[in-house]
Image 1 (cartoon, rainbow, N blue to C red):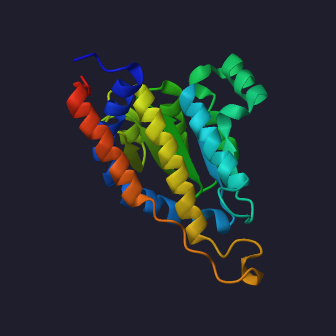
Image 2: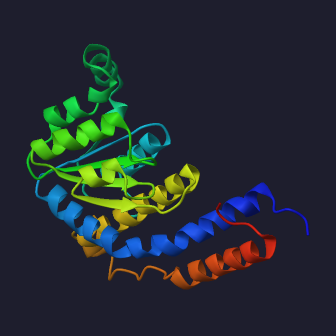
Length: 229
């Protein structure tokens, strides 16, 4: 039997990780409702990450300040790693471990939310940010790789993706970003213009298709010998 292709092997690992990831549904719904209530009450979301996790965090702020599906009020969300002048000045003057923590102290207010993304859960600058957030009275959340890890332990709550491959972790963090924003939107008042556009249309239920796709991937993994190590 031929060895699985790079794509087949990657999809097999992703399918395995999805089994445990399904248990994140309730946490994402709770986070979305809490985030919607915080942002509509005048609070803000601060997010940060390094490397690929920075990209996922900035994707989240773009969806909230802009929109996910429908037009709605802009929501206050700041990606701390995108403040390049502040980031480099703080790193130069105080050290790289302080690049996010000092911004948290500057921008964070009690009951704001701080979300930190890390595949390893060990990044020193994120751990310092979590400590600064808790000291300032922020609600601290983390999206990480497998738990236990230091960052998950330093935050009030964490979504830990049980996958050994950081690529898979980041991909499921992106899924988490989209699902989180979907819950935020559902918890908000009607989208702009919805009151005059007739009754809301039901959102297509793609869960059956997703299950079918995962089952196909899992079947393929079983047949090809793919999977995690």
